[in-house]
Image 1 (spheres, rainbow, N blue to C red):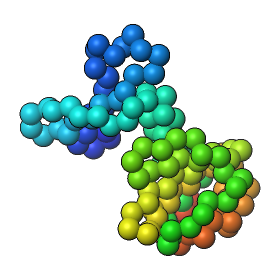
Image 2: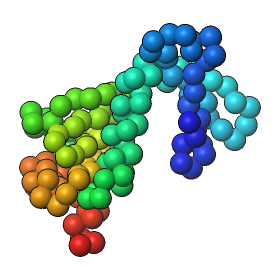
Image 3: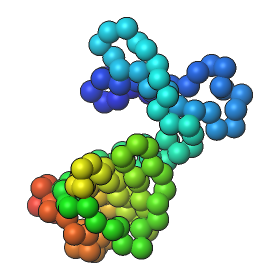
Length: 135
């Protein structure tokens, strides 16, 4: 898989293909391609990427913001985690949070405006961009 700006590749080692849930490798581009471990589970990695794509515009309503570190409301189910990013799901919505140094970058996607409005209002986030402004 090629990252959208072509700075990173992800893949599987051919000798791990018989495994039910092989580990994922990553390689930066721009020079010699050197692979290193990204995540120990293809299933976990693909779940994270699915939610990331949904929150980044795959769903029709989205928002991007930041917050001090906070607890995600219990209505959100943890779906996957890779490094500092955790993906959550709630009916009709996807949420990805990247935590670093006590702060959180927050990405929300929702299937319809009512789910979006409810979810975005309940998260303690300073929204920098919201598709609600585009309506």
